[in-house]
Image (cartoon, helix red, strand yellow):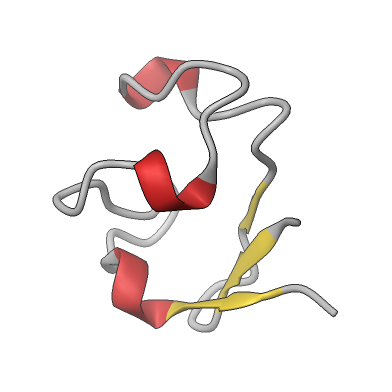
Length: 52
């Protein structure tokens, strides 16, 4: 499942991860560090919603 930033629309895809910010490809959303922030707008994980 992908997760979308409610603020800017960035999509976190677990298959891709966010390697530029220390999240390896294949990292499930639940395993993304709590202090990770959206690489586009800087909000926290609590500002993301599961993509339908």
